[in-house]
Image 1 (cartoon, rainbow, N blue to C red):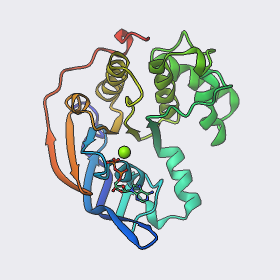
Image 2 (image 1 turned 90 degrees about the horizontal axis):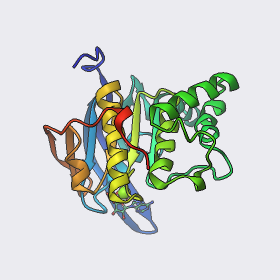
Image 3 (image 1 turned 45 degrees about the vertical axis):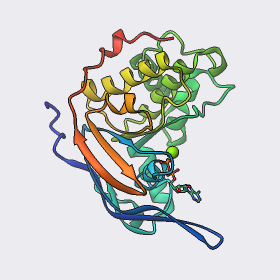
Length: 248
Ligand SMILES: Nc1ncnc2c1ncn2[C@@H]1O[C@H](COP(=O)(O)OP(=O)(O)O)[C@@H](O)[C@H]1O
Ligand SMILES: [Mg+2]
């Protein structure tokens, strides 16, 4: 790999434990979980419903608290920081793509993408320029003034990917990013994520219960009952170049 960061650890999780308490009922959703992800890796996390995939993403990104262990992202111990510092660190280091697109309906594509940049204090002119660049990168240069309701599901998910990338995050977390898409659109969104990883070295951790998606990702981790039970590197079919991925 030509990326000089490729051997540097980006995410180091050790002994992570997460227990949900609802009344007197306790569910151990993560049990002493260890995970190391290097810069430039793309990792798929698979496992049956309820195995802890979403919890893993929420805890390793610091969106949710943990009950034990330690998570370091880009050299910073997430749970040794104040909530405010963690939020700030997240805004500068991480991008998120969820199954529900979470786009603001009255905003155009470019306004949706630039919003998080404006929220961290980027100057409007720079935010606009970067948002337009990102939309171009995901193949939506011709849709920048469209509102979410005027785009297909696949296009909307590309807008959320552009939004996730706009802050130039070290890591992108994606939880079932194709869960709301038909198979053709799911394929295009996966083409895009795989190409961003292969061509631009973007680190991506992607949660899916779909084995067709897992099969496309170079490193595949399996979870069961809150534990990692498998971690394999696999040969994958190369994605199309970003420019060649159709929109629709
Ligand atoms: N907010 C919550 N409160 C209580 N239990 C939860 C909560 N979120 C998830 N769980 C439980 O934790 C386990 C893991 O859930 P989750 O991480 O959502 O799994 P997955 O994403 O693999 O389907 C499940 O048993 C689930 O019921
Ligand atoms: Mg889930």
